Amino acid sequence: MVDINRLHGIGLAALVLSCIAMDAAAQSENLEEVMVTGSRRTGEVVIPLPAVTIRKRADFLVQAVSISNDTRDSKSRKNETYQTLRGLVQAAARVPGLSLAFQKGILIPITDKDYQIPLADDGDRDDASHAVIFVKLALTPQTDVAQAISTLETFVSDAKMVGRTSLDSQGEVALSVINPERYRGEVIAAIAQSVKELRAALGDRCRINVGDFSRRLQWQRSEVSELTLYLPYDLRVEGC
Image (tube, rainbow, N blue to C red; front, top):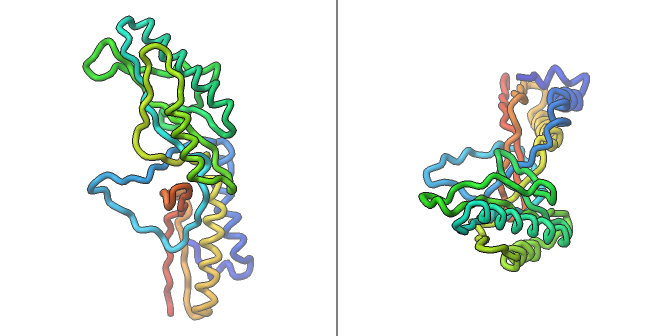
């Protein structure tokens, strides 16, 4: 817990700077891209949001796509799948902001040189294989989201297949964000401003304790293209 009253002489900016410094080194090395979906599993506990949050547009719209092939010969099956993937990468390069990835905890780019992603057997069949890939479209403040979703749908439906390869979209369009921890400083600054306003409203007769800022930043989807980001923290008012 940080006693806000003791920070009166140095100001709330010191709180923000000291908390940001704790994670600066880790954030500079953490450029992971994480997926954010809009669906919750039945029975999943919904954790209430804290009083202070910020909203940001995600970095990408993401459509999950199943790629499968049932050519009987295993070597031909693999070749057809990888030829299709390479063709998809080349087609994506012709659409501004479009790219491909596969998931292994985080999203990993599929490129013209690295397109031979892991393939899995398709259920009980030993003559079929599949993988899930992600078609991504970069978001900017000016992006028309409806048009962007249409671009993703058109790319999947118009994709050129090799042999017995097929593509099928999986579920709704999701979001991804690169290094969400980069927003930690903004969240802490917003918390500090909220505490400053609370102190001004209560006056010097109350003590305000706030913490703990060591927990990881959290996020959830708030709109089709936006995220709500927040930092779990404790705030206690005493002595009033």
